Image 1: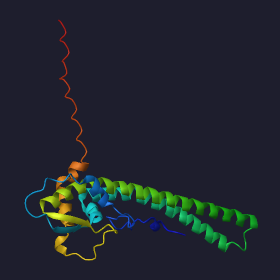
Image 2 (image 1 turned 120 degrees about the horizontal axis):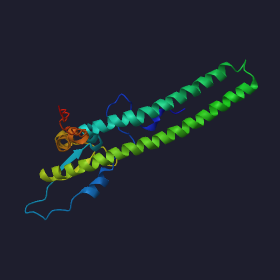
Image 3 (image 1 turned 90 degrees about the horizontal axis):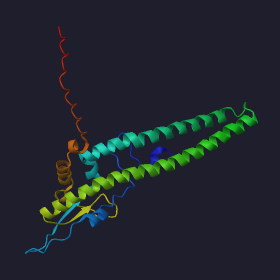
Length: 224
């Protein structure tokens, strides 16, 4: 029987887990977000080449950490707990059927086997639904944060004379080796946190102060 880990979700102990099968598609973001080229300037074109671990950069930002923690708590953990509970029921019934095969009636064995089969089908269907939702929700997180990061990367590359920055977290990017000095991941994370500080992203609006009540009017003095 497949375990929940087969959903492609990293261990819950890893705080900044990402889907190993998820390809961020940073190249697609680049195509949609890259601004129109500026007029050609005098001098040779830029020749610097950089690399970035785009997935790692997103989950290393403070906003990314918060989003992934919330995703783990509200999506991954409840689904894992539900599947673990159902799997435990199937395992307990399977053990009971095996141990009681010599003493249980044939009807009881058939009933228990039918329960096991039904729960196994439910487990498989629930696992598939959970996998689809996990991938969908995490994809939305990466899409939202990745789009914002792309604008920062485009400006950083232009300001620092880069001709191209390759995403080494994308399995389709064939980078076999790169010097550490060309890795711009930490710079982009720093710039992201500066532009999108967590307090500005998640701080709730302060409640409005209650309107001041007018002073109570003292009762009119009784006429003598």
